Image 1 (tube, rainbow, N blue to C red):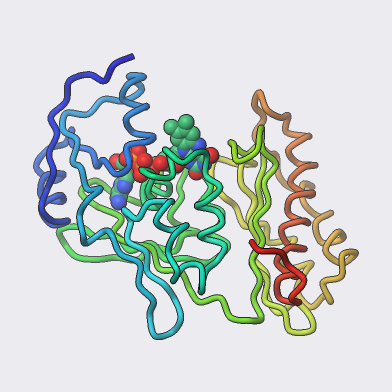
Image 2: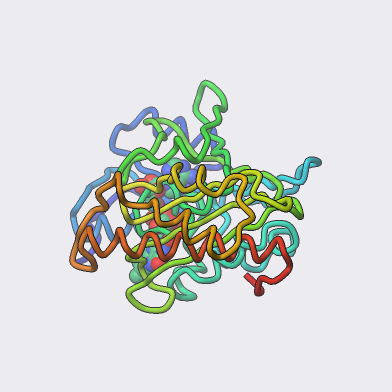
Length: 292
Ligand SMILES: Cc1cc2nc3c(=O)[nH]c(=O)nc-3n(C[C@H](O)[C@H](O)[C@H](O)COP(=O)(O)OP(=O)(O)OC[C@H]3O[C@@H](n4cnc5c(N)ncnc54)[C@H](O)[C@@H]3O)c2cc1C
């Protein structure tokens, strides 16, 4: 289906983009357009004005901060993440995830901000950013506000972004030597939509000091599975410890079912991917991990 005729504007600044959003209820931000244009073509939603922010310099930067965290502008594409030396040297997993999103065309246009603001449960970045405890920096006409990634995703295609607001950037904390990050998906095909996915952040110093285990595709938004995190804390993180910790998954939640998997299947696979994600994170700290 062809796109309906729609007004298109390219503002000069984030402030101007916000002004347009505030003066026109039917205006919507356009970043990479990889999801929004399809949504409009399929008439699932309609907009009066597309406000193209993809080339705004204010949204296109990757910078390190003195504490070792990095700030990524919302309109940085997956391909740019994959080719950023800074990201590779300090936050390798972000580059790895970016490089595994669908195909080169999508990676050339799709942005990390659009990936998060869409809040599609199959999208790759939301679970990783929750596991890494990222902060979403949101701009409106009244200034900036910060929302933790864990609080940002509100539901299927719903986020903390309010009318008149723009996600300006994402701040990701440093990854010290005693922290490992794992990311494992069970997909329909290689580099394709996940049936179930897990990302784990583990701080290990002989024993597990702290862990964040995030499950995706078992609910409309990425969820931290705290019973598993608690079961890991203080353990020596042997493969047996990790398998035991993962076995607590599922007694208290009902994953969504769809054509790719029943609730029961997803619950079983959630245990498997969470176990593998934690194992991968632990192996990285111990220097046994691969290139991811
Ligand atoms: C065939 C195909 C396969 C795909 N496979 C995958 C996959 O395997 N994994 C994956 O993660 N993704 C996948 N995608 C989705 C792709 O990653 C999109 O790029 C992403 O979902 C949206 O990013 P975008 O920059 O294109 O945003 P757009 O499509 O331009 O926008 C998406 C939504 O976010 C809003 N928005 C965008 N930027 C901002 C901002 N800075 N502030 C506030 N709101 C904003 C827009 O208004 C819109 O509502 C696929 C897409 C296609 C077409």
